[in-house]
View 1 (cartoon, one colour):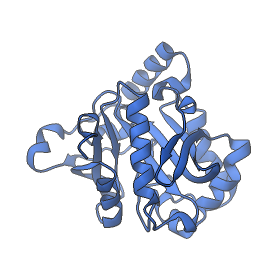
View 2 (cartoon, one colour; view 1 turned 90 degrees about the vertical axis):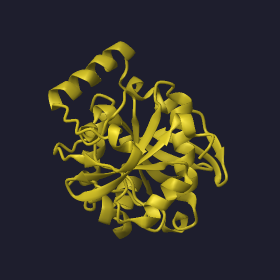
View 3 (cartoon, helix red, strand yellow; view 1 turned 180 degrees about the horizontal axis):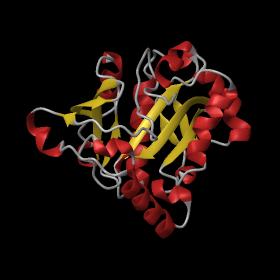
View 4 (cartoon, one colour; view 1 turned 120 degrees about the vertical axis):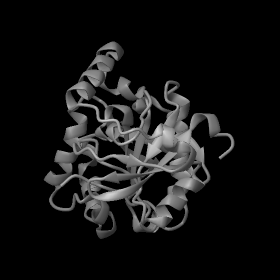
Length: 250
């Protein structure tokens, strides 16, 4: 079963699987209403858009501007780097994290390593619109990330996406690293990495469960703003957005 949310700090979660196909209308109040039209892109159109960009860029990872080449950054918690997943090196540790009950409750990828492998291979063998990464802090793998092109994802049917919108999924693997603010610190760092290395991207997005108050709070603390409530197949989500134009203010 594909993941729905990702555990970060004491239940903090973010994410919707890039392979999800159902289309449900999004809803927002206030000034954001004009930005939340019910867009439903056919799967064929999304695939053609991704394939066209892949051919222009020349490599899979060009859809996300070479995540593997992004430099480490210094955060309040230490030196952090995103390292694209290699199955032969990383499958065991990621599968172990997926079998942690706190993580499994959101990602729904508990089970033998083959379950996690299938999830990873879908991205690694795909067109490059989603890149799975280890989050390495001071030389130690401690989190799992997925950066994905939200504008080329089925999520684009649920809100008024803009070209190059980039989504984030995150889980923090070790219990010892949860509940001490790392989620907020790393969310801000990764959102900044996206905006620094993807000049075409004006917004970073995420979709924690609306009921998960700690998650929404972490995104707000990391410089995201609440954009809309979105009905997804298995939850009502808080669509969180970090804007390039507001990054110096939030």
